[in-house]
Amino acid sequence: MPTEIILDPAAAGARRFAGKVAIIAGAGQGIGRAAARRLGQEGAAVMAADLIEASAERVRNELAEAGVRAASFTGNLSELENCRALMARTKATLGRIDVLVNVVGGTIWTQSFQYYTPEQIEAEIAKSFWPPMWLCSAVLPYMIEQRAGAIVNLATHAVASRYRVPYAAAKGGVIALTTSLAKELAQYGIRVNVMAPHATQADDRVTPRNAGVALAASELPPEERAERDRFFGDGFVGQRRGEFIDLEIPMKRFSRASEQAAAIAFLASDDASYITGQVLPVGGGATYPF
Amino acid sequence: MADSGSERSRPVLDARAAGARRFRDKIVIVAGAGQGIGRASARRFGEEGATVMVADIVEDSARKVAAELDAAGVRIATFVGDLCELKDCQALMARTKEVFGRIDVLAVIVGGTIWAQPFQYYTPEQIEAEVRRSFWAPMWLCWSVLPYMIEQRAGAIVNLATSAVVSRYRVPYAAAKGGVIALSTSLSKEVARYGIRVNVVAPHGTDSDDRVIPRDYGVTVAGTKLPPEEAEERDRFFGGKGVFGVGESVRQEVPMGRKAEAAEQAAAIAFLASDDASYITGQVLPVTGGSTFPF
Image (tube, rainbow over all chains, first blue to last red; front, side, top):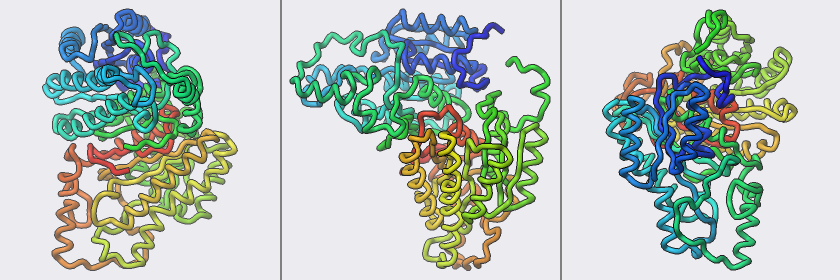
């Protein structure tokens, strides 16, 4: 055994994913990277998939250094053909697909709905709605054939917040995708659940929210911008403390990415063998409307 | 796994833990630990390194569970009392503090429907007995543990709800558990500032092959004689006479088409009680084989 490298001490020695193969879609940073580390820590073989090759490689390497069997895939997972290629590659290199974690997504802009252009709205939906839809569609043939599998999609507390209506709508769709798909797939031994994070610190964020998006940002009136910046701290969730922390979160702090990863690992593991079609909010006590 | 021999010569209480020791050095009270989900929770906490206070209304049940944990090397104590009574709840907390020095986790399993019949057949006395068991136990247990957890500025509480909140034949029990959900969600907002988390696991029908204590244990209220056709319909729903088997309830409500194992409920309870849920409070986690939960 290699490793005195501990990827995630929260695992507390658990090896719930020994012998399992897990795909982390959007593994390059933040919650995705934390999920890759947690599942790797617990014994999974990990396919680290990301839009950004350098990010995917970095995570693959840090897992491999800790003795985890790891591979990487680079592609735009808003496109069905890339999702299919990811599944085929995983099957070819790691032999099967036990777990699919869909972390791809995240709001690109933050502004009141009337300031979104139609093109911006389409870009938000392309980034946060279509990857889980295509990834679920692409993985199903493998999991149905195996008669086993666990899928974890990500939603968000932004479904009950402000300044991110298109992203919220996309994630509302992801919730319904999950809850209804769960009813269909229970007969095949496949579970599908949703983890809904609130604001999460991603100190390792290097890829900007608008990576690969060619659209211009909207010009906001100064008072609109000022109000939004008070809400978020600096216009984007997760960087500097804003009003919304005190308004929405009883714990009054950001979460760590590893806290989101712990919930993802729970839902993906056999610890959740009787749980499917559910939404698990990881929101510091914020009320979740679904 | 690099288990160094000696550690693993003990009996395995719950293989699902897969080697995890999330509760090492933690003091855990399992209220209603004598059988079923409570016993499975005590085993899971013990497997993961907890010191366990085994509390139950039935002395034999508490002793039996304590003995099996003890045989696996778990540090334990027992408490026997009626946890529907505030004074017994307070005594449980005081005893735990005295014996173990602190209270990190409170898992409240006490509760469960006593009868199963349409609402109009419940007598007022039966309704009061249902609410006493399934509503007041979590209420008094939460209230009794708070001074300790607030002083510690740390703690995790897990209450139990039920899928019966959207089912049939158990309206008083359902109402009690709806109250437990609101107790948990609103209490969580108040105690977040003290580092205390409060969550709910909502099970659907769960196998408890180890059930020896009848549902009406300690209840002096008489049951209702149902009209034969009413009793038959009820028994079809639950899949057995006076027991909860695999009946229409499971076929209609549970996409997985089976009942849960008690260990599957315990796994969710352990998750919410552990630091893995450190950013989760005030939430309801349905463990229901895919059935939809309305809260």
